[in-house]
Image (cartoon, rainbow over all chains, first blue to last red; front, top):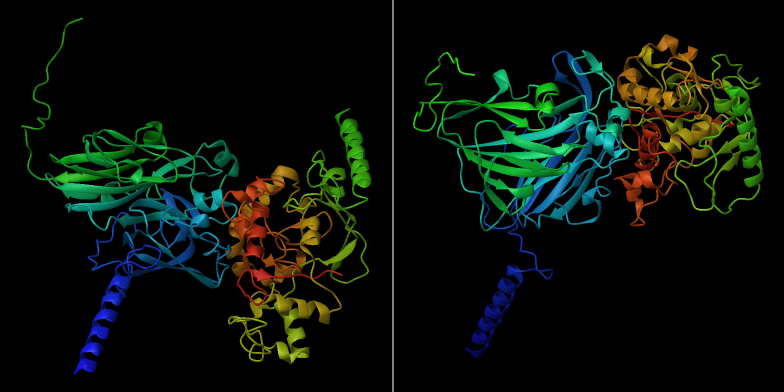
Length: 347
Length: 290
């Protein structure tokens, strides 16, 4: 009997030890649940849905580099290097504390070695060296998503500016574990970038990268989501009046800061520089190159709302414009439209 | 007048080089002109060229001279390159087939993964058969450094060093148009951006006639056809603050390099740096020197 009791105590004691060791591992990181998932990755303007987790877990991110020719404007194409086949690269969504295991594959047909620098990584190069991958190979490395927020990732192989200018960038959102973003009706992924070509804006055919223009910081194009008109006309973003919208906005540059603005509304919340500071009632929010921001707003009345870089020549002459089209009933208490129009004879 | 000035300037540069490179290493001095190559200066402005007479079939002579390493090393400004012979064109599938036939240990089904990873000669139909006639005169790709080296040895040749390859690459382009200096940098960058499609689509019949370009030494298709293995491909420790190889990445690469605007050369160094000796890729071939 005594022996049995003792063995029970032993069991209890070791169970308690186990629980204690599960709560925190020696480095103070949240313990992993032992579950793992493969991250759902999306192309702009789609954002992956938030995943409910019982605790921090391993999240596998599979990224494949594709060197592809894509349209940058009507009749103009460009040879992009991409994370996942599109510009911008895939959107990744994880939760703070997750162990992110990155698998970067570079097909044998690629011309270049590539790599990835996640601004969400706490470690040298953001993973650049760990992920340096020759054509025909796959690199694997892991990092803990310690800081919540919206972060850029980009290729970091020399010549880095060219790898970035050629389309190798995207966003990773690290959701705060204890206070996730409140639900909204729509979430979208928007990324601003510059394209430097030897030809002029409007030239047709395959356009070549211009190192001279890139060094002079004089882009031919400034665009959202990789091309002029990526969110105009048939590909505009659609919502209903009265709905709430959240935009995850990145600016890869490579050179210019974005004065991000939506004509005809205000941001209820602007997560300054993509971090934890939230500003309210904002007209235009500044996004530095290599930075990001989250904006939330309610579209009050129907109509077309233009997303622009309010350095306005970029919107008018270089392509930095995208549309959000809201449908639904008018609310004249908020906005009247033109009520009266008449001749004016005064001086 | 201007020409005279240029010539006298050149003479002083060459004199300076001759004197200061007698002993290596030495105290760094960065007063030299960049990328000194006899042709780059002496032939500037001329679109005509006379390849050096070579008694070795398919090879051209590269004259001796000085090379300033792209990634600068403390104490070494330039290194003397002795004259050597370089294959005028990259090694073709047909040439490589002869080697495999004579050395069956290097056939696809016999080779150890230590010497060449999966994908070795994957476009060939069989161990001793290329299959696609189009491929025969195209540069061989999907070969490892070990295989390239074995081929060179079998031919009584060797792979060029990084310094030799880059030194040869300094000569101005003479076909399809004359280009040196910044114009050449831009041209090579443009060719690189098309490399992938060119390699796959170029008609084979034109191969021997220097399909894409030729430089003043008579070397063909150094740029924009395939990347090329070199003997010491992984020997460059690109400088970085962390002391690791991070310099091949990030902005640090520019800080330790001779010319931060020479993007094409950055690409070659990044490519070489990413490789292991048993790697094979679709864009990577080689040529030999002697």
